[in-house]
Length: 210
Ligand code: NAP
Image (cartoon, rainbow, N blue to C red):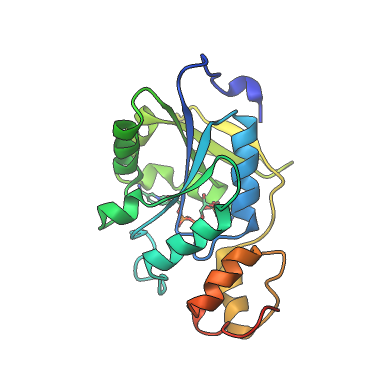
């Protein structure tokens, strides 16, 4: 990153990070990203916003019910100062559009500054988002960079880049590990594994901790 790229607080405006995802399931890559972005940009809060209906993923695979994904994210952030699980998109229902979420957050936090945080794949797809110009107007866009491998981003957007210790972990790989019983230790936190077991999510992991 380049802390110099980041607008600094005047001391009054609340600085809120919006890190949206399907979080199916949430893993330590998400959490390492969240705490590092919060620290680097001096955010007051960072919301891991659980997508109700990730419309660009519909039909590509079975998505775990939103309430189960929310329970996993709540377990992931519990006890971590500044991190919160967001349920705004679930409460709104329907397709999840970040532009709408930023309107709701601004209504609830007048005067706050918002930072929409994206991994590199999500960042590359930003121009395809519903009303993406509204997202740019309402927030600064933060892209999480892999050290030594800066991503090529769509032109014309004033990105803030934050370098984090990028961990090569994907929710896709974790779902297949859950199905075939490979280890999940150190990839998913114990409280999240607890929710997966309690709710028998992903069809297989119902036994005792690995
Ligand atoms: P996801 O797979 O659950 O991932 C959530 C975020 O974590 C993404 O930015 C992802 O970046 C990042 N991430 C994943 N693995 C990581 C790792 N190991 N280290 C660091 N970061 C990692 O989320 P998603 O389903 O792609 O959705 C991302 C957000 O985009 C959601 O809020 C969704 O609602 C929003 N979106 C909005 C629209 C719209 O129209 N408004 C359209 C599409 C998406 P990568 O993508 O690089 O993996």
